[in-house]
Image 1 (cartoon, one colour):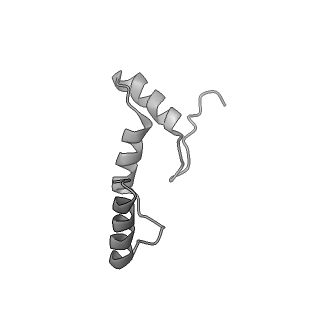
Image 2 (cartoon, one colour; image 1 turned 90 degrees about the vertical axis):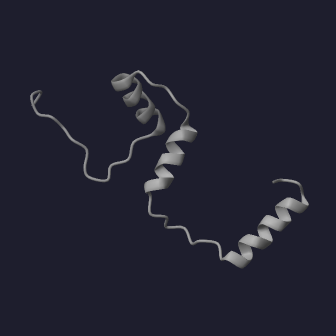
Length: 69
């Protein structure tokens, strides 16, 4: 059994720590979890409903009112 290579099932998930360790081991590069999150966002199909444009504008105005953006 020691000679068998175990591969994760398709769609398996890795933690950010595992991703960082893998990249560090293979390339020597280190980076923040924010960079991973930004890259993931580029490729993920969002299952969250998108905010309608009218509500998005109202939220933006409210954030501006409270000087949060």
